[in-house]
Image (cartoon, rainbow, N blue to C red; front, side):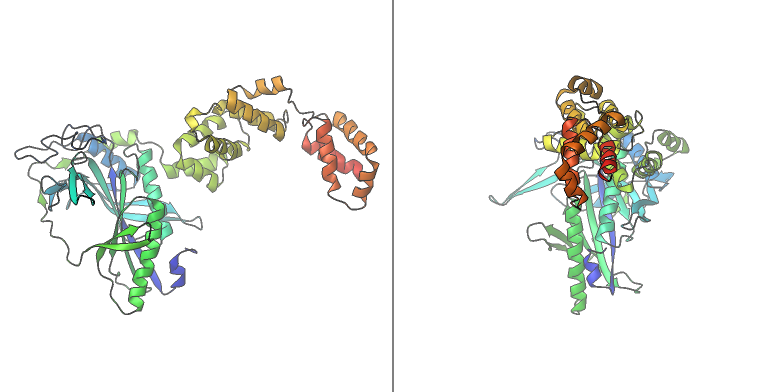
Length: 485
C-alpha cells in the first residue's frame, strides 16, 4: 500500500473484483474428442462439434467435472449437487455457433475464498462468488497491413473454469497476491499450466473507486487481456488515479472496457459498456444437468495434493524457514522438492542458504534448470554436513561446490582428492599463530597502538600458512587471545 497511488488520495478507496479464465489441461476438449493441445497450424485441430456444424450434439468430458470439483475443494467452495449449462448468445467471428456453452444460473461451485498474505504478514480471504465451467472460443488474428482478419478455431471448445471474486480486493498489491495465489493453486492441482503468455490463465479486472464511508460502489471499468502480474498491477495503479481525477474534476466515470498500453503505460478505451449486453441466456437443451454425488467429492478429496498455503506453513514449522525462504520454495515446486529431499539427509541450518544463494545463483549464471544440475540433493546435503562438522571451511566448501557442479563428484571424494580437510586442532593452529606473531613484531606494535586493520593482516597470514585449511573461527579466537597479551 505504501507505494500505491492511493497513499496520495487518503479520502478514496478502491474496490477490485477479478474474473479469471483457467484453461484446463484435460486430454480432449470439453464437448468433443479433439485433442486439447495448442497447435501452430491454424484450424488443424477441429471437428464438426467444435466448429458448430448444424445437427451435432455435444457430449460432456467427465474429467472437466473432476477438475472443477478439485478447484472447488481447493478454494473452500460449496459444490452444487445439481448444476446445469446455459447458452450465452453473441455474434463474433471466432464463435462458430453464435453462442457459448457456459453456466449462468446454476454454477458448479459457489461461495469459496482464496487466502492471501498481506504486506504486514496477516492473512485476508478474498471471497469467490462462483466457479463455473464453460468452453473457450477460437482466436482472431488481425493483419493491419492487408486489412484482413483470420479466424483460427483450434482453441474453440477448450475447457475453461471461470473463477469470479467479490469486489474484496482493495489495492494493486492484493490483486497481484490473489492472482499469484490462485495461479499456484491450479498449478499444484495439475489442472492448468498457468502459462499467462499462452492465455492459459487470463484475468479480467474490474476496478471502481469511491469516497471512504460511502455505501454504494463506484462505477466499474474492466481491464482486459493483460498477460502479466506486473502489467495488471501497473494498470490498476493507473486506473485508480484516472478514475479519482475524473471524480475530483466533477466528471463521471463511464462504465467501459479498457486495455493496457505497455509502451505508453496507460489504459485505453476498448469499448463502452453503458448498457449491459443482453446475452439471452437459456438452459442448453442438448446437455443434461450435472449431478455431483457425495462419492465423487470423496474420491476427488483422496487425490488432492498438498496446496501452496499448506506447504508454506509446513515448511516454516517443520524446517524452521523464514516466510521469505518458504515463499521462494512454494513458488517453484521443483525447488521445494529438491530442498525437501536434501533436508531429509541433513539437519544443517545452512542448507537453505546454499540452495537459494549458491545453487540458484549457479543455475542463473549457466542459464540452466534444476533437473540438469549435477549437484543432486544428496550431494549438497553431504557438502553442508562437511561444513557443519568443521571438516572443511567455507572457502573450501565453495571450491568443492564449483568442482561438484562441473564433475558431479561426491563432496567427500573431492575433499579427499584435493586435500581440503580443515586444520582444526587448536594445538596445531596455536603454534602457527604464535610463530606469525613472533615473526611480525612491527605489525604487532601497530595493532597494539590501535590499528584495527592490522588484525586482517594476521588473519591473512594465518590462512596463508594453513593454505586456506585453517578453521577461521579458531584462528580468530587464538589471534585475539595472543595479540592482547
